[in-house]
Image (cartoon, rainbow, N blue to C red; front, side, top):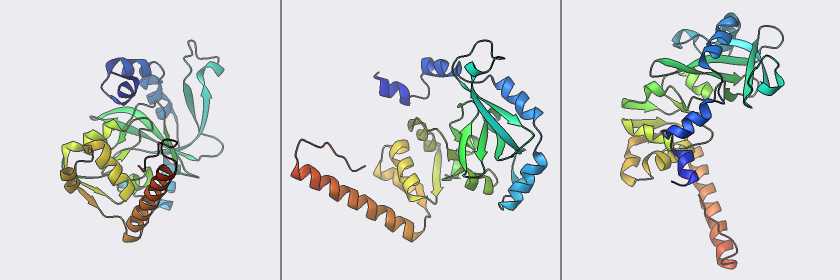
Length: 241
């Protein structure tokens, strides 16, 4: 297998073991989350953002977060060049922290930076939010973490920034609802090999304006690529994705 295939293969044992040593031990993640307060602050933030905390199957905490490389922390006895997140109960509370489960077991913790809604995970282990929901007759593929939270953590969100092959997990579902045309077609491409028959599994309920804008942009990119390749054959290896 070449390097690109190894990178894409989520089941490749060596790669998983290689990554694991750069992750914070899950026991430490549990301890840090349990030691933090911020439940009341998280509930207030959720209400302010029209998210029903009662519908979420887990507790959230609103905390401040510091990040450091482990070799900058004297308490780390054997640093391996990983990022260490620390939850603070004082100062600005601008990060919503919550557990991420897989097969009913907590494997990671999500950090949603509330000012700009950027997202990270403590252990860089999780691939999906709501991965346990990817089964049965239907699932909604959300385009963002905040939409997933607003839906009471039903449906799923793909959060792996490095790989796309794990989208094949969506093959376990008969009908996939998605209100983002670009995300839906990416999931169709990577999860189903852009098979025409598989497109019937997708119910894209994006707005007509967004759908029209997406295909207009695609057509413009394709026209530019074809024009450049025609005018300068061999000089540009352009593909309109």
